[in-house]
Amino acid sequence: MMEMGPVSEMGRYHVKFDRGLLILGASAALALLAMLVLGPATAEAAPKFVSCGGAAMLGGAQLNCTHLAPTKPAQLCNFSWSLLLPNNVPQVVSGSFLLPQGSNNATVYQGSGFVGSLTAPIVLCQDQH
Image 1: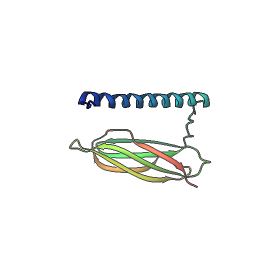
Image 2: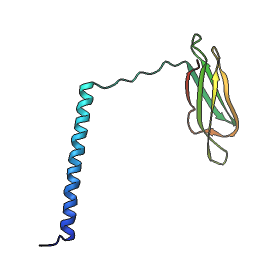
Image 3: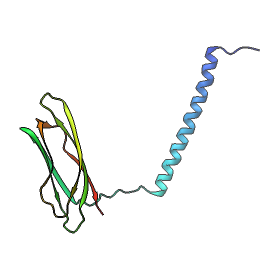
Image 4: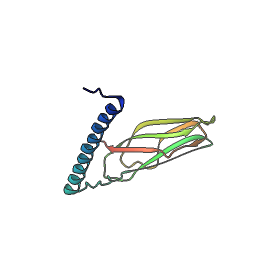
């Protein structure tokens, strides 16, 4: 009987790999067909009850928020903001705050030692029940 050399061994693994791709392709096609039959899920934007804005300049940073819906409850919010230190090193500040019902232009973060903002502040809120 003839022994298999390195070339035939490699060819045998190549055939196994090709079958794996065939199975993977069939699975992907089946998933696509199921998605088309069931229909795409549409995402809806949640109503916005809080509006925030921030600025970093002249050594300071401030983030202010307003509660937009007076009939809605207080909003529990988290924020994250990438600011720039004087030595050109970024620093991410983050925190949480409770914005009471009817708040207007409330300062929710204030810091010093920053020369600018690298990103806009990211603020995520939810109803506080």
